[in-house]
Image 1: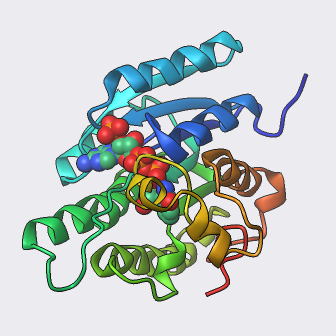
Image 2: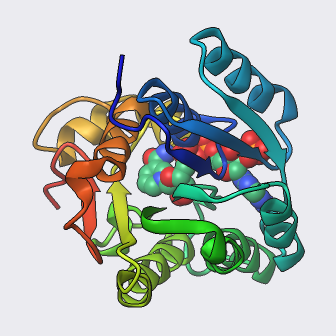
Length: 245
Ligand SMILES: NC(=O)c1ccc[n+]([C@@H]2O[C@H](COP(=O)([O-])OP(=O)(O)OC[C@H]3O[C@@H](n4cnc5c(N)ncnc54)[C@H](OP(=O)(O)O)[C@@H]3O)[C@@H](O)[C@H]2O)c1
C-alpha cells in the first residue's frame, strides 16, 4: 500500500517524547523512514523506534545535545545519506516571569530553541533533497501576550523570523520552510499548566474547548510534509484549536 510519505526520509529532533514522538510515529505511519533524535531520553527514543519497527517501517535513534553547535555537527554525522523532511522540534521552556528569569534559564532556552534549530538546519542543509520540507516548532506565544513566559516566547519569535528568512534561502531548491505554532498541548513541557489547571485554561482560550494532544500537532506536520504542502512556505500555522486571545 502506498502512503503519502513512502520513500521519504525524515529527521525529527526531540522525538523521544511529546510532540516529536507523535510526529515520528505519524511520519512513519505515512511511510517515511525516520531518524528519531533524543538528548537524554535514550530508552524512550528506542521505544519509539521499536514501535515504528512493529509496523514494518524503518527508524533509528540518534543522540545529540543540540544546545551546542557540536551537537548539530554530531547529529548530521549520524545521517549517512540525504533526507527529505527535517522537523526542528526539540525545545525547552522555563515558566518564569521577567523579574525572576536568570541568565542560565535565558541562555538554556535560546541555546536549544534558537541556536540548536539554526545550526541543525545549517549542518543538514546540504543533505536535504530538492523539493524537501523543513518544519519548525514555534508556539502561539510568539505572537500573543501570555503572562509568565517572556524569554521562552522570545525564542519562538526568533523561530518565526528564521522561518521567513530561511524560506527565501531554501525556496530556490523547492524546499518549503514553515512553522507550526501549537497552543497548549498535553506533554511534559506543558505539565506545569496542565497539572495546575487541568484543561480549564484550554477551554477558556480556545475556539475548540479541549486540551490539545501531541497527535493534533503531528497530523498537521505530516500534512505540511506531504505533497499537498508543496506551495506553502514561509508561513507560521497555528495548530491550537483556535486560540482566541
Ligand atoms: N507542549 C506545548 O504545549 C507546546 C506548545 C507550543 C510549542 N511547543 C513546542 O513544541 C516542541 C516540542 O515540545 P513538547 O511539548 O513535545 O516538549 P517535551 O515533551 O518536553 O519534549 C522536548 C523534546 O526536546 C528534546 N530536548 C530537550 N533539550 C534538548 C537538548 N539540549 N538537545 C536536544 N534535544 C533536546 C527532548 O529530548 P530528551 O527527551 O532526550 O530530553 C525531548 O525529546 C518544542 O519546540 C516546544 O517549544 C510545545
